[in-house]
Length: 333
Image 1 (tube, rainbow, N blue to C red):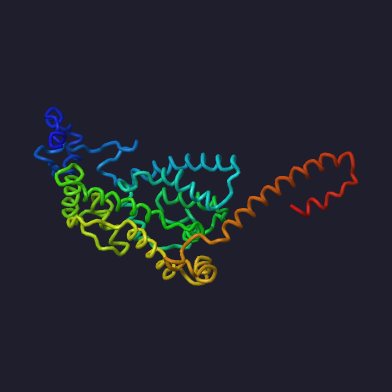
Image 2: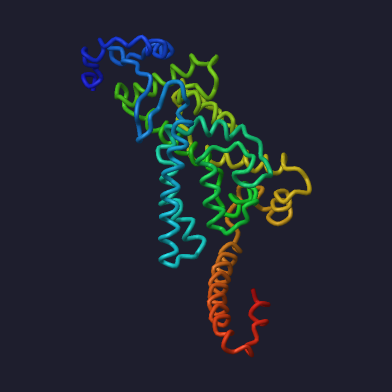
């Protein structure tokens, strides 16, 4: 393993160009693994995305993952329509497997910074994607759930999540990050994952004066977990419970919904009058009426299409037979 960590001398001896020297200076000091210094570069490519030292990981990956997820969502919707799938439980399960897995792919690596921002964001009563400082993956996530549940465009984001029975997207990101952290801290001593997590924890301690969105991965993970009420110190190398991270995120989300939502709004009416059980972790989930509403929505849409076809046929034939009572069709539209 130590031999694999050695950097070729031809690569280490390369001197940066003048225009890159200023950027590379911001990356100092260089990390050392088993002696040789790792050569600093201003950018690298991962998951088909170019990450740059002057731009946070989350901002670089968010737009790219949302764009890929849009294609996955369109393909998913077309396939479900072709197969005639309408059950809400089935559609939401398939969404998690086929679309959300694409949207949040490797979120443990690039999403802690976005989760940190989401944890600090107050609950607003606007609809999904309107005047809300959400990241592009969060917007894509809410838009798809809204379409899947046939909800109005002005439906508040918290209501969309409650109707789907899903936690906020950044709760999933923190769960993924917790699993990644646990795999690193439980790696054998002296192995590459163990050396990497030790270096990450050391760097996280030395960046207190850096803006949170520009801090390294371990520091952003620590800030995110503390923002949702968990105690975490990277240097201690303690394991993180993925379930606790997700539950703490959801608990904070529900507390803000009940405390920060203004009175006499649709959001407060939904959580306080329509579904008060959603204000607790035990009662949060998808309501049983969602399946019935979706079935009625699809049947009504099919009935309207048949009616339009019949009306078109009658109107075409009306030029030959004016005695056809057209009024009864127009009253049904």
